[in-house]
Image 1 (cartoon, one colour):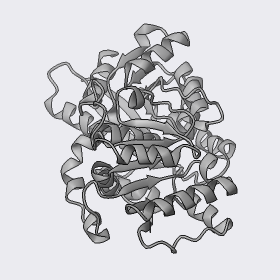
Image 2: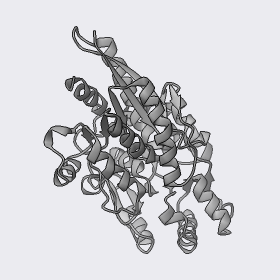
Image 3: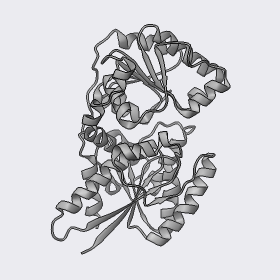
Image 4: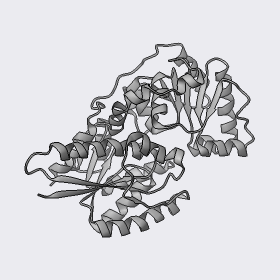
Length: 369
């Protein structure tokens, strides 16, 4: 009986959300497979791009992901340094393990692993392919473009991603609309997220607080901009509690710019939270303010209003159908007021964001054999 050898790549938080349901779908296939259907042998490689426990290993524990079979331990560094370290380490693993498929996401490790596979003749499947912000100052945008150009299968979360790929000359047979695999993880973890105690510990009521995450250099590395953002959030906390699990980068820049983090009682600065706590906060917040791609999707699933502090998004369906709106620092105050004055739930959940995307991915991989 043929065995299909699949290597899954995890590099940072968004990848963990994609890996967990894929591992589950592979296990379920192996249990229920019919005669003639290949067994799938899955290996997990962690690039170590997130080396801090709060940003990495906690997600493995909470999502029930097996310990990685390989950990490249690349740590932090410039984009070039991270990419070079991943390529060097990953090439050795591929030459030894000879996987049939490598499945990737869209962080630095994605592009690095895709380049290695392309040189070695190993097939690549890109999960959440076709997303475009059309802003090449975003490192993820370059990763996506390169990966999509080289990948053998492109699993898209929404029809706009299909159209992006077709415009770039990708043939139809490579494009598979499967839905949003990150929503599979949300659906699987709803019961656990709703059991979280964090809201009670913080004295929060459902739909009675604002959940904030900010980490992108465009928002936190500019002194004048970060001072304005933090002042806006502290002013907002005078009206409604603001919960802000602060990213290590953001904390570092606040310290560098002399921004106080403990001078407003209802501005609740926390250490980074785990996945279940984050889901709980997203579902029950009155509003999410973020620059994260994943939170745009998760808030859309919950139909929680979301303001994304960015000039663009690679997930436009969260704006056209979902609960998301792009905002700027100049418009943030007015946009917050508009949200607080309207219905709690807005938008709709996009098609195929149904918790079954990973099953469709596994079926597509098998159909190629």
